[in-house]
Image (tube, rainbow, N blue to C red; front, side, top):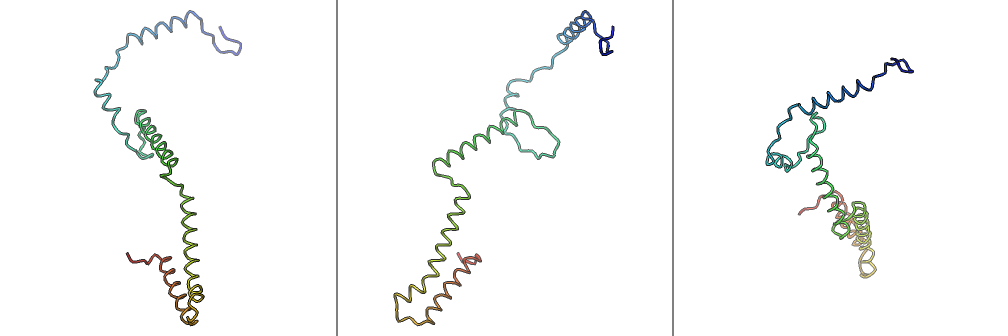
Length: 148
């Protein structure tokens, strides 16, 4: 008998019979043999290998979960180290380093004028030589030409 939209309706008795038949078949079907527990444990304890994303192979759930848990532990460890002051943020270190370099450059370039003020008998040529030597040293440092 067709339904209101024209599609055929199924009889309740037919559905129940079909369901019983399917469930009987599933109960009577042979089950896959279980692997020994030692083999299952060895497989689950193997470290998850990082696979390239384009190899087409889907990693197992256990491998992915182990990788996920390991990364969570690593993030927690980094957060702990940061709170204890063992780690610093990259931006903070970069800013502090730039400030230290700028302060050092400013102080070094001020040495010739300070020397002239403290040693009044210095000639202007001698002050110019000090300035030149300091600038050469700063240029070498900036170029990375520092000998060990």
